[in-house]
Image (tube, rainbow, N blue to C red; front, side, top):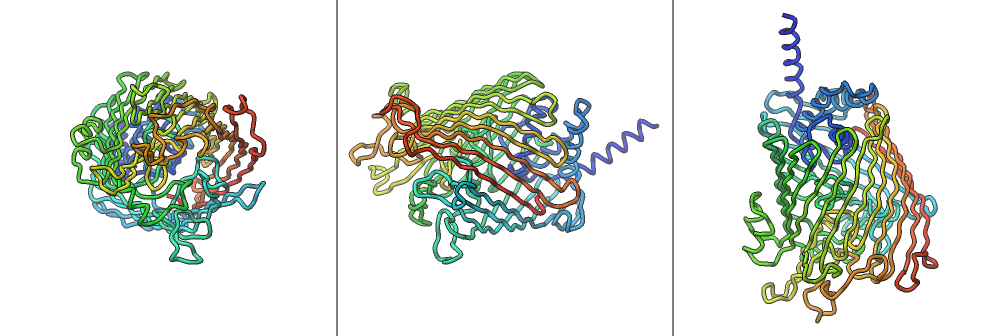
Length: 580
């Protein structure tokens, strides 16, 4: 009788948790949650999750419940952190408005939650206070369910932003090199003259962002689908080569199916958005820029993990001019083969990842990305546009919810770029771009072409409400104007128009011109006061940046060029009220 009673209590409690979850995506801004799940996966505490993120809330609840079932191996501090996530995402109990910032309509079939949030970030270079930036958000959201299988969400925010960005720079100077991503949609309008529409808010400007989605989930997350506009992160590394979390959101239809624990298949089909890169900010125009960037995007990924220690994946993606091309919409049609059926006008890429794991100790991985690869041109030709990434991730013994990552990434010249479809017999008079970018930012790694990066990072959640990060990055990048293939600029098919051509170039990394070197040391921390019933988050970060140029081709060494050395001390403060 006692066993029956305990079983009934368990069923009732489990049912209450299930009724509280939805299938909407959990934002990638929940960095600490995603890191916790990754650490738990490496430690063998939960089953291997798909590498295509974001996850649906219902999938995250399922993973948290599985982790809770294996909590005997957790320390008391780790269990406290896990309990907070279960309370926030699984139980999700309503609180007074001043504590959670939302209002709810409880209903078995059509529950609704609507709320507001405030998000602010200020950054400055202490050595040069003129290099500063800020982002301020006032947002409203609504989310709910339509029965058991369908959920919906809408997030709309208005922003006041300003950054310092010098002509030809690859990022705003108040942020770490290659860490900035735009937060607004389209362009910004200056407060001083609302009719002026600009790519980057280099004086006080307002913008907006809208992130809607309709999500579907069937058979206990064996099939998750979404029609919406969210950021994505596909891969095992940091700064993923295929689809990275810094990539701007775009409207798409996507899905992941996991028929067996050892196999996942993910697809995404959507329309990319216009926008110039940071270096080409002055060329931005709401019609002129969009006129050359009318692109669609499709990506497929197959993941297979036949054992606990072995994992490999294959990916296949394409950027193509907007047209009703049904083959790219069909998840079972490989992009590479389909281009041969419809004609060679599209930008295709493919690759994969191999990973080896020792449960509870580490995971090591190697990822290869091939873009317009042409073996006959020779391995040293810039025509072979290749990127690769290798690294190791391991929990830190004795540290709660911790992980150390050591990773090396290399992006060869011209990678992620493509030639113009320009004045050809097929597209008379058009000058269309089909690079691997959306809204002026890369879809894959945040590094520019002709770059490499050594990364060492630490993440720790030492106690409930606390998270800390530390790291070192060495980035080396060919200087635009000195080494060809070092920007996202498209290249032309014929040399007659004066443009460079990858077939006629060779690469000699660090030795074929001027290179930018960045040594970056960073520290950060975040305090989530929601765990003490105060609806706010506070964050602080500090980055030391040592930057200089070298020219081995002229000097025969890697010593800093005279006048190129720069030191920066970047401080950032974030504050959020009613985060959700």
